[in-house]
Image (cartoon, rainbow, N blue to C red; front, top):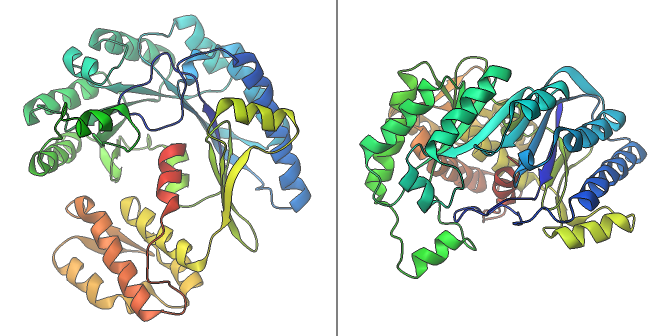
Length: 408
């Protein structure tokens, strides 16, 4: 199985914390729609010529930016191109990111008629002062109304929330979680506020205008997230993602399990697991340059790389520990040895402390271990470096982590 990702770069307003490529305009929307359809054709032609195309695609994800700025007719033009060039499963999960406050029942019905069956709302908070700080353009009441309206049309609705805001208390964060639960959504993504380089939020931090939450409070809020959501029937299936049974995001699971996904639009990143190699690429992160390349008949790729065994191993460990576990058979296929043998001391220590366990063919972190997943991964990779010095370079190169973040 494989996935398809489409990056819609348009936004009404760019949030202070956002590091994804987006522009505060919808000018050029017509050219963009024509270009992304053409890119879909060019990518499909290239895959067919190389004989590398995955046979079936079972997820589609419209991310951004703000995909819900496009009408059902405009989303439909992209869907038609995808269906014309790729074989999409009858039960495919088709997700669209939405901003609260801007949707109508007519548009929701239109998206559903196209096959969209999952909506993801960037709510971030149910407190108006926190929304204003984050420069969100909706109010808490608009978020509540939008989610209620969406749930009248769609069964599968997700929302994003952000914790560890400056001056936010654990009690206030809990109220955001409880509000999300009360609204009946089946999936909640909960992220700690990150001061990404290049964002306005980070510039505010550097200027002394904003102070990040203390690390211990951030950790307390993460624990609050896990305990509150678990107490209301949500299962944690990744460091920041929680779902009621059956509502996990299949598209994102594909990223974490390193399945192939084709990506279209400016700044979109793709991954192809071919028969003889694994390749990642990233598109141009500028709409004008993207349009120029596509209109000249060139795939708009800014960078690409064939993954070395080192990078494959790092991704298998890092992404696995952050989600459903390190796939031990895949690790052994690349490394030629069982991870449990080469990192026996480290795994035993973490297992004895209750942070990891072997679950079938996977090494997984426990709920207690999620907060330390990255540190555990670093120690395991260090053990592999020591045990396989000819395979592993003595350094960490992790481009895939930014790829995953920008695509989801």
